[in-house]
Amino acid sequence: MNRILSAITALALSASMLCHAQDEQPATPFPYPVAPDTCSTLESRCNYICQHFWDNYDISKPIANDDDFLRAFRDFIEFFQYANRNVVMTSIGNLMNKARSNTPNLLKVAKAAELSLFFPTAVYYSDEVYVEFARAMASNNSLKKEVRTYYADQLARINACQEQKTLTDIELVMADGSKQKLSAVADTTTTVMFFYVDGADSSIGRTRLSADANLESLIDDGTVRVISVYLGKYKPGFADAMPPKWTNTCSEQALDIYDFRALPCVYIVGRDLLLMTKNISVDEFKEGLSN
Image 1 (cartoon, rainbow, N blue to C red):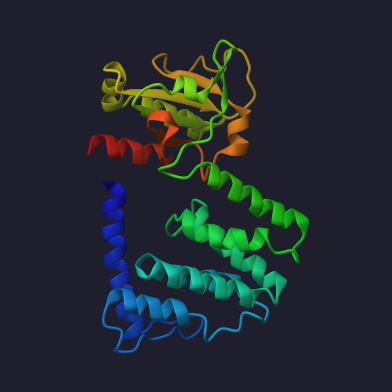
Image 2 (image 1 turned 135 degrees about the horizontal axis):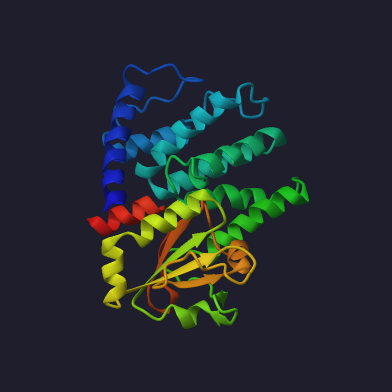
């Protein structure tokens, strides 16, 4: 529900942004396009702006101010949410093709995409959109191998964790040292997976989840199973501080295979490892339970 409310809020903000862009345009790093009056709908206006956003910016020249460029890039992708999908993908391809002529600029475009679409600093999360940037980087043979590998690894993790598709099965090490496949452990209608590492944030996240009365009730009536996954090497006693009603495990493999934007985080998995949603913060999850 909170994500629906966020989307509604974003729509209102985008409409306001369009009004400013069309009428009293605020100071911007370069002149932004103004949709003509013939574009009478929100989608058509966003389409026009996506198609022409970079017309007044020469991406082949060195980027003089990284902060200004990131600000412009974030403004650019704000319109993606309300534009036609094909227009969005074409506009990304055009930008990446133009940036290829200047490798330092291309790297900055990709970094702006990470910051704005993939990292916790994202304007909004969109695997579908971010993948277009990452794929262009991973397939660009003019880039250094380590750069291509970096983005190829991101693509592999995203592909392994696509919402509404089967989550990649992994091996878990149980608290007693035995090993089981995730598919053998996630045997309820809904499985909540809590991924964590060492640190204060993980400890606070665990405490907040374990104290949630709504989650406790769902566990008690068998509706939900909570599987905690420590993303580190097995060591005796690693799960001593974890709630006894949870299935407490560890897995070094998960860190290489699954898509994590920030830790700790929650995945929600349905029957047969159907990934319902991923990378939810503890606060988002608790808010969802209370609605």
